[in-house]
Length: 424
Ligand SMILES: *Cc1c(COP(=O)(O)O)cnc(C)c1O
Ligand SMILES: [Zn+2]
Image (tube, rainbow, N blue to C red; front, side, top):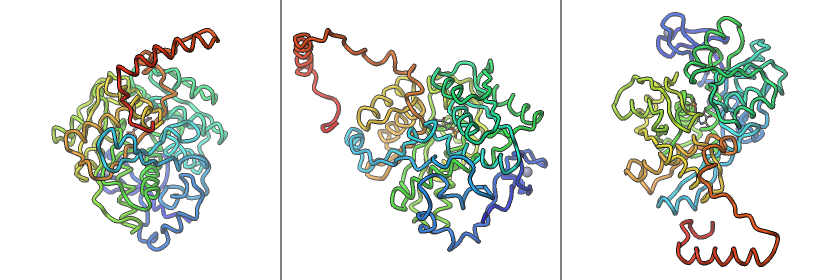
């Protein structure tokens, strides 16, 4: 049973059958999946969802596949945790971390979009998949393609962190480093998709791929006990996840699965690559492309494909945008680790840093529920903290050596009161 009707142009409404196309032939607008929402009424319920296994496919009725899922059967359903320690530090009442640094098998939000795209690629008869990636997408495509037995070509900018490079190579794809930034990689991948007729997951399979990102929002709502956070802060790179979280919230509201609390959504970007935040601040709909310069490489997209839709969702919801410098990003990575035991990559540091600034500026009230979207794992980006952490002391295996160390430690403790809250 599938509720998918086909594809439709977001701008002019032209309809297309389900196939590997993403741009309208009439007006060059982006295509989006259409569903038969009327037929879902009374059939897609809290109970129907709760009866399914705890992975991202429990929301399959709202995803664009026709047959059975072919990838990501253990992906999704990541922790949504109440962040009590962080609440104390930030002086807020109700804060949650939705933690996709724990998303199986390659530890980022990209499992969601890739699980759907790979399933769709198999449905449409492709034997080769590919992607233009800032790292995490390549990791996820390589892993899921390996399981599905598909050939994989993953294209990345030449200057990514080693964890991101090895994190793809281990799965045996063909990896190509492109001598340029992400926007150069993306442009090349559009030409490759046209010429080689592969399923480039975030290019010609984009309408299907992006729908997978809704599962992040569905999970937040269900895990909160079928309610929505009032404020959701989300990183923006190409602009897939933010509008899709907002769409997920609206779909659940429309199906009567959650109450409409008029949820607001906020975009977080690095100060060194903030085209969407700049547009939000200036009140513009159009995005002025930038040349990225930031440690937050996974979200360093200077010309975001769906930036326009991020601005629309943020505006429509009454949210806002905020950015963070590289130093603020690293501080936030450390803060999240030292309060909540979650090690995120710079994208997550950006989101937490932006959340803190939105709270301090009064944009997000301290007494309303807040969800911080953590989208990637810090183990892949050790470069950004390696010079920021004091290396451990080394001593001979002797108790008197340890005693000497303790004397220094206690003297230090007496001078500097602990900054972390009690219980950490
Ligand atoms: C891809 C990615 C994002 C968001 O990207 P969008 O293109 O805006 O969906 C956020 N965080 C991490 C870690 C990512 O890899
Ligand atoms: Zn069109």
